[in-house]
Length: 227
Image 1 (tube, one colour):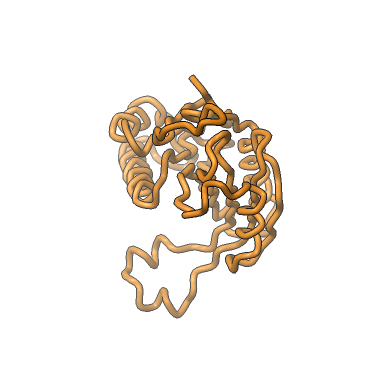
Image 2 (tube, rainbow, N blue to C red):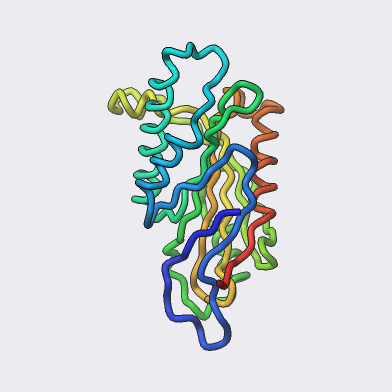
């Protein structure tokens, strides 16, 4: 399990707000905290979790592979922190000889909603807003109302032509799933859990679908922490 502290705010009078959350991660996945301890976590990834490399990588290239992966994770962490991220989760060990290209971010959401508005009312509004095409479902997470949106993200070819080379190289079609969850006993506060994967290159393939199912299973283990 992993634990992350939410930004502490005075708890509401009617209850005690959680100070964090817990998730059960699949084997080979790790948490990178984005508010505190990011550098230490990245060092731990490099020295403790990357002893394996994918099949086909020569031993002489193993260190270069680890350095490249460290840089990619660090780049993801910086971008996630800029967008209000609390934690970044990534796979760092190969499964079946390959590395999974996937990640998810837990972030606080500055919705700007009235703190007195019931969560169901806020979710109804969010479900009706224009957004990425895909499936929007009302669900429960940790016994609280939540919203799940599943969609495909395909870069706009015209915009990519004028984008910097680094952006063009990083942009690729991705399968995305976003959860929006109300913070228990703390009206007006919300978090999101945002998953992204290019899968095996085919966003509708069975393999890509399995990765989405894996993420949904992880969210199913979500619970609030009060310690």
